[in-house]
Image 1 (cartoon, rainbow, N blue to C red):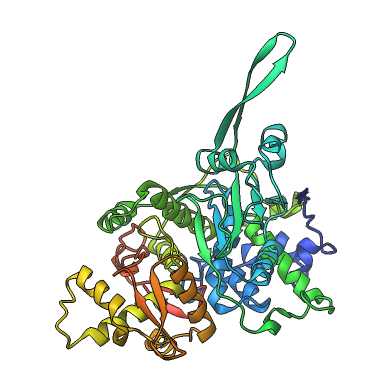
Image 2: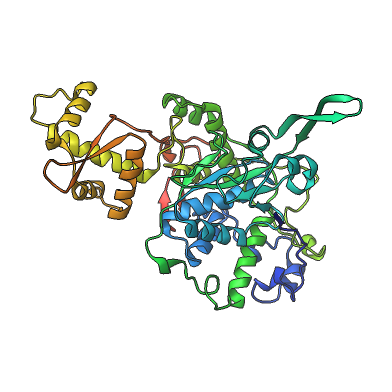
Length: 481
């Protein structure tokens, strides 16, 4: 079953939602100035105080007001950008990883509230036939499927569309003239937002698809946001602000983005010896390009309003070229940190921290013994045989949280230990004559994530290595890059 969201124009008169989000009459300002942009929003690079304030700050403020936790703010921002990505020419397919279905649905609902109308289509199940027979329904849309195996009947076709923007297949047929094969071919862009859990991976599994881990909800009441998840209705101000954000981002238009520091990024990535380098490189480039477009919105003019619309993706005869800066690089690094694995296997941040805690406890107890810790085989063999080197759950919990920051709960540590045990990465055995369990590693390392060089090291023609003050959309704090 399909639930397409149909686009509709937003009329620009004082009595309709398009303008009701803005206080006061705009009529005198229409007559007084051809550039009305400041009436609606401040241009990111045109702040009076000289501090760059990315447009994404408006979206993250919306997420926080509507119950998205700080831990999931990055995931919400990436999801929001993914909903824009196809129409802006830089597709960003993603899969949300979580065992908390409520967290997934809540995040998606909040992101869809301010996504461009007509930019996505939701499906519960998808077979290959609609992709070929109803092309206009999917063309240029982001397909949202919240069931991990919902696209199993369209895996090869959808994956090819996502990665190559085209797909084909040969379908056997019978007729009075004999048997044969009928060729089917399609060519159009689509995006994808899927979901997977610990026990049920998404049927679409490719390095070109970004996997994002959501932190689990530990407070059942945290989703009860007034005006959205309770019986209370949102206020008019809530609706105006939601519509304002949707309109501002909906006006963004496709642009050609030049990234002058891609050679720097490329050299850094090659140093880390990635697998599937080209897909991960393109993922990073597309994210920088999307952020560059959001930070360079077109100006709103009186002609646009008098024309009758604040247009979604306002048409233009020419395609503008935007040059990315280290501001967009910094945003990209903040969003994608802990999300792109160096090798094929993807491990979440809690899994890596849990593994490193067990490893540190094991190796710490080996210190002072005759074991050569540089000899991996000897270390792993000793851990298997000697329970005196095993780590207890309480000790792992303390070690995992020893570096400060947000506490990883005992519940999450226990869950990740079980996940790693099922994968054979960590072993769990009972201590002799005791009810307690001990944990030890079966390998010396697990997947690392791509790291990014400091933003201050990025050279671009706008700032030429000079320091820049910018608002971090994920924290709201001003930082110098």
